[in-house]
Image 1 (cartoon, rainbow, N blue to C red):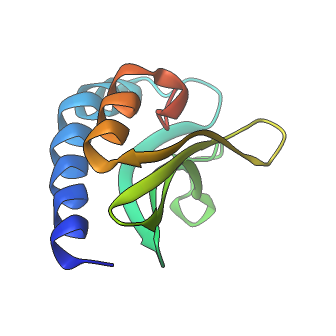
Image 2 (cartoon, rainbow, N blue to C red):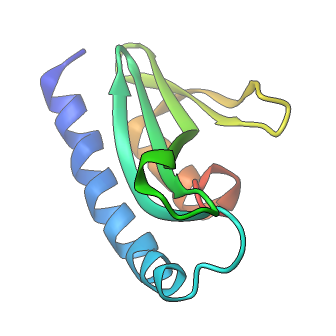
Length: 119
């Protein structure tokens, strides 16, 4: 994977995650309620795939019981193009778009909450 492309994705992810989820996570930490709740949203690379992930705190509130859910995936298919997918309730990835540029993926993720890890 080209280093410049990876850096571009990382810069976008850091800025967007901070702007979009920091306030939500703060509010949830003050009043988590009786269910599992998100405590962190973060990016993760696995080979050629970039993931938007959320770390959840279990109801029993012990940090060792925290768990991570990968929610959106951008898979590099070649020539700077990505397939964009989200993780469905059926425990399978569903590819919504194919052959998007990184900038197009960012626009789709920002504008469509189906790709957001805490909705």
